[in-house]
Length: 291
Image 1 (cartoon, rainbow, N blue to C red):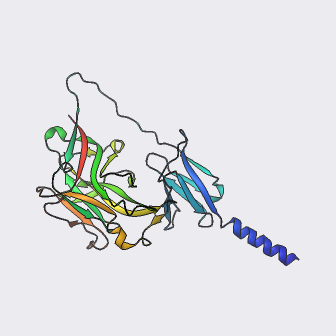
Image 2 (cartoon, rainbow, N blue to C red):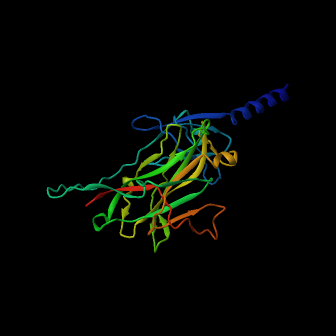
Image 3 (cartoon, rainbow, N blue to C red):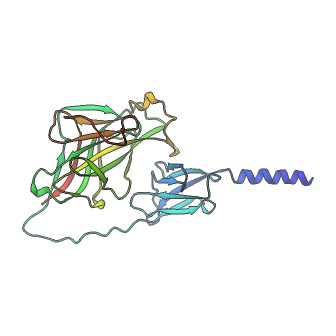
């Protein structure tokens, strides 16, 4: 009889410590749900995202603790045993620069880049492929302006988007002698696509305080993969034939006097960028306030 109770006790304990937890992530102030938060286990190669409703699923025997991050919020760390059904993220305080009102001149919003071109080439991206293009100021009035937004021309094969959603990462690099060196973004900026995503994607980045100097900046996108409805990342599980026609960048044609680079695990030589094409530029613009 004692052995029977022992076996029942062990089975119950095993069930308790292996069951899946359903958790929703919300803003601590507004209580609104936060979609696509990054959830990872420190020091382990495991991560996923909350889904479009801020929900994620976690098997509580994976590790002792987790870490959750989201753009504009403080990083949240906790023991898995302390997790209930809701996690609240605290917004970061953003200090705004002093505004000086001048009666003489008004700053004019200006777009710079290769978005508004008539001739385009569509290039579907493999997983973990990244392309970047150099964008420079067009005149001295644009030098040392803060970049407020970036805009890209993309293409999504919506016939393939059902249970999975492609997502990509924004990159902005410092230009050092015509070569991308340092990523200027303070935090990772991810963008998730669905059937409502159109071919124009605008990403606000004014809080990053990135300055457009006279050398310009490299901007581009990296195709990271897809997530399912639970927010779980899918890489090798995806049919390669589908990913080849899932997410594409559109490139402006016949443009000289700038640079475009690309890299991927199958293109990297000594972990160096490869110049993509002499006349193709990513269909992208940056928005600044011209002096």
